[in-house]
Length: 300
Image (cartoon, rainbow, N blue to C red; front, side):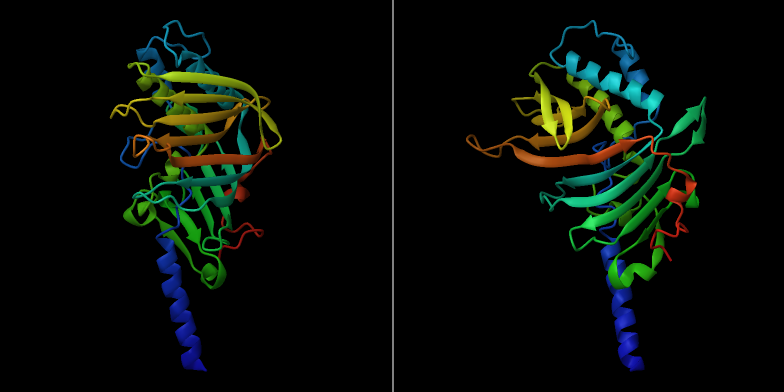
């Protein structure tokens, strides 16, 4: 009996550490690739100023992407001024090493970073509780900026749930098979990246933009921006991208991007998608929502 118990315990530990390599499979948010420089809080303003664009003011330069870029700028202003925290069901997948995994679902809580001058007065805080698929169900993740030595707190589901470990969010274990670091997660980071990408696209031609109103996404009515670059070029991140902005919340709730077809008569190739379902803002999240000792969580 003791040998059998030891065998099961050892197997559980092996499974836990094996699954840990996939822990951060949903950290994203649609931001920079792992090799990109992390977009800082001041980056959008610097980028916009360098391109003669002011936050909250109409764009003056004529480029097809300007109207779409203005929507993103206005949304970022709104989020920074009015959104302290939010919850959602986060649904995502992104292609890694040529493979597109199945959709992953997780309950998400985020408290936005807030600064006064150069000081962070409210750190970016993240909690994730994976729902499906079965391989990740039960996994919980907590990351709070400048807390826990900057590490992720992670445990797996099932028999491995008793083991909580700390992981460097930018280390090889967390980034194995990943595009994104947890430091880049969240809607505010998404908007910064959209603005950065849009400002880059304004330097070039070959940019077709469509804006559609009154598009339903879940229970929300949205304005959808679709951007397409017909010809493949190194300076473009994607062939086609869609961003759904919830009209009431004034926030992006869906992002999808495709790369160019692999053949002359082929279809665009889905590269990544991120969805914020059942998004609720300013729900009053507190420190205990990002604390492993929270009695409603399963950390040990």
